Length: 162
Image (cartoon, rainbow, N blue to C red; front, side):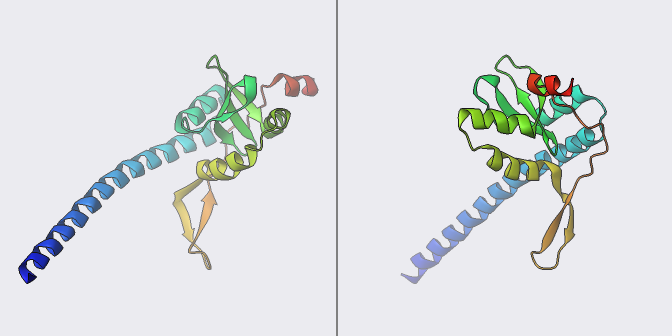
């Protein structure tokens, strides 16, 4: 009986070790993607080309899609207050937070806050630049935006500016 119990314990330990190796492998892939995204985020933050900023912002966060009715989807963030809108035809436009709020309010959605809080934090902060904090363990450091600030390409904003 003791021998059978010993064999069961050994099998359970072996199974636990194999799961940890799989988890480590998956974590390694996620870490590689994360550091690639941080590098692209730095390129966006230093760019003076709006088209480049839109393409790269959409490339990093292509999984995030907030529907904006007949306009398309929010697919990324260029910097604080400026998002990337992908139309149903596949075109990319920069859109300001005011236009996003107006569009979501028109269709009765309340997705902006969740998108803003979670994705903006993920896209503009980096683990690489975390510094030790006092009470929570770490304080996140925002990546500096030194590139050209984008403009809103929505018709309603363009009309207001002129």
